[in-house]
Length: 88
Image (tube, rainbow, N blue to C red; front, side, top):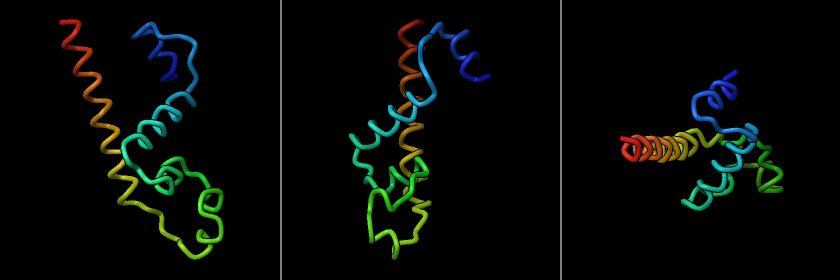
């Protein structure tokens, strides 16, 4: 539903929701978010990233995820502000 609305509003076609996950992950990695936090943001199993360490490290990385997602939100907001300024 949201995807269809976004396409109607902006005229963007030929994309899938997974593209947003890929973009988010790439941006976070490029901006210093550690891979174990990226895995937690994406809700991936930590064992696939950290191997045996994941057996002992049980953190949900809640603060780190929140910080990373707040930085992402600021970035997305800046894109919206830049787009509004360009079309004004």
